[in-house]
Structures are given as C-alpha cells and as structure tokens.
Length: 297
Ligand code: ADP
Ligand code: MG
Image 1 (cartoon, protein in one colour):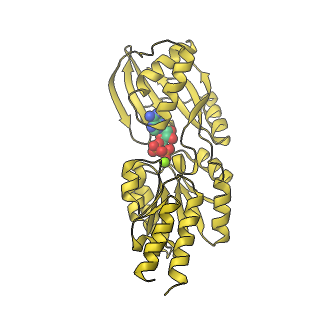
Image 2: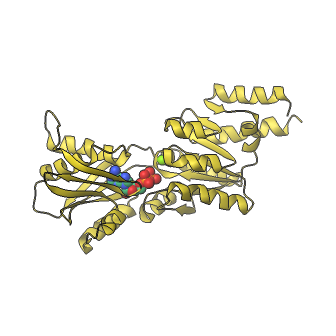
Image 3: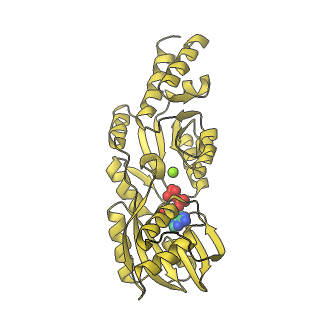
C-alpha cells in the first residue's frame, strides 16, 4: 500500500472510533488468523453485580456484609467494587463507614485478606481458601458449582478459618459478542478466551459466546505465553483485552487491541484501540486492513 493509502485507512478508522497506531498495526491486522480474548471487561460487560448470598455462619446478613465490605473496600478489583456496592444496599446505612481493616493483603488472582474487628477475614476464590487451609464443605462446593454453571463467579468469605458465606457475582456477556465470534469464524479466524477466573465460569461464558477454546486460572504471564505458543505454531495472533493484567499479552501479540473503556496501561500497550469498546470494531479494523493492503499495491 502507498503511504497515502495507509493514511486514508487510519483516517477512516479514526472516524469510526478505531484508533490505529501506525501503518504496521494496520498492515498486520489483515494477516490475523487467531484472536485471543480476555473475559472480564472484554467479552463481558465488566460491571459485575452480586446476585445471591448464602450464609454458613449464624450471623445476620448485615453483619456478614459489614465484614466483607470492610475487607474489599481496600481492593480495586471489579468484584470487590461489586461486593461493596451490594453491602451498601444490604446494610442500608446512611453513611457507609465500614469497620477498620488491619493487615490488608491483596493476593493477585486469588482475593484479599485482612483483620476486621479482631477476626481474620478472607474473600476470594477456592485457591485463596485452600492456600490458607480453609475447609470448603460439600454444601459450599455445591453452591460454587451452581454459580459456575450459570456463568457466575462464586466468591467465598471466611471468618477466623471457617467459611462464613458464599456469594455469586454475575457479569454478563456483552450484547453482540456471540455474533462477532460467529463472523470471525466465517472469516476463518479462530477465537480463544483466556481469563484469571475459574474453569467452570470460564467454560460457561465461552459456551455462551460460541468460543470453543477457553483457558482459565491464567496469570498475566500465562496470557502472554499462550500468545507466543500460538505464534510458534504458525498463527498470526491478535489479543483483545482491557486490564493491566492483559498488557504483557497485548505487547506479545502481532496485533494488540485494547478496549477503549479499559485501563490506561492496556491502551498504551496496544496497537489498536477500540474507542467505543464494541467488539464489532475488531471486524472493522480487519476490514480496513484488508481494503488498504489488498486493493492498492
Ligand atoms: P480476571 O480479571 O480475568 O477475572 P483476576 O486474575 O483479576 O482475573 O482474578 C481471578 C479471580 O480471583 C477472580 O475471578 C476472583 O475469583 C478472585 N479475586 C481476585 N481479586 C479478588 C477480590 N478482590 N475479591 C474477591 N475475589 C477476587
Ligand atoms: Mg479484563
């Protein structure tokens, strides 16, 4: 393509909210034959809400949420925000000042730990509990499995070493996600999902989206490693993500695409920014690349 064609291509992209950072990014897009999607905030809306709570300890739901919010108010994770929002509604206080949390620790990809009112509280996934030698009862397991089958994320809360409650958090698929995957399929582009979330929830969301291959419980390095593996087996790979934890993978990919509503770090790491946060715009970017690099030579 001539430099003028590239300029026109990126210009057309810009008018449609597809920010293409240079000619190389535009050129690589039409060679992509595999796209790796992050789950939370990329395929899903990214604003989780607490939908169910099951208590396992003889305490009031208000009291349970006071403890849980006191720990989670210190975390930036979308799940933490969902829990604090729900706690505000549940406790119906005018001014939400939670008990103070001491010794707060955030364990990336697992959950949080703190001391609240002299009790040790853990909020997180199964791994978080098992790493702290907390027994998960068959009843709790059942609730987790049910949540996962409904594409929800189950979160455990323990107080002084015992599971006090399990809550389910829902973060639905973006409308149209399914259609985008099926269009990509028809373009012979393979779609894969990678997430830090558990296998059950990951498989449910992937199924809803029409994605055959899902990889769960992935650390940020795992996401980048997966991309390099795909490249080594001959794929030209695009990564679509929104989080800080997606940035190594966005850099590793042949084309990194960031969701516009995502974190600054992801936007900086990407070659293409989908300003409207619509998954449809992935197809617009590929089409533009096709038009620019096949029509004019
Ligand atoms: P992702 O953003 O892809 O879902 P993360 O690596 O951020 O992945 O988190 C993986 C899992 O760890 C979450 O699904 C959740 O179960 C657990 N987790 C992480 N942070 C928290 C938190 N602040 N509170 C509760 N659970 C958490
Ligand atoms: Mg995400």
